Picture 1: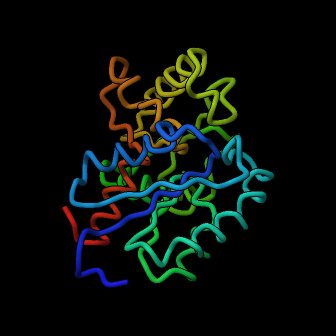
Picture 2: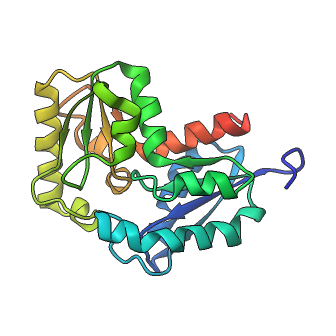
Length: 220
């Protein structure tokens, strides 16, 4: 697909299944506001009602991710996988001829521009492997907010309180920035949620994908 004619068309793959179009397009709206020169389209996996939050849901999603990307990729100038675990990312980079950006790697890349002591919060028992791979010994500590085990928990009042507590724990570890290892936390806007409690940079993985994709396509 030519990248010299017309607007740059970027796909956003959501890994949680939903028929709520306003919800599905929330990440698209966030990135579009920062990068108006790009055109976006959002699609979601067909059979992933609770997103990806453990080994079983990751395994179940893999074939869906490859099928959706294969059917869709030829229409795009770039593809964003809007999941901080970067599921299927390596394979997608092999099979697609356009830039593919994962929320995990993008979040790490932006976090490292703020320093070398990075704290991470997410919904699993440990940070996704991509965070360990990218950050290595610069990943100072990881926290899973109490009671937050899947994307739906993030949007509850109890989940929000637990996220604030986890951020405060990371602050006590003197980290330079906090990387959010779940794109659901972007939907809740954790950065705004914790603004009253810390002035540390909190890296939104969804916005990070937009920044990295804009660089890949040389669009600002």
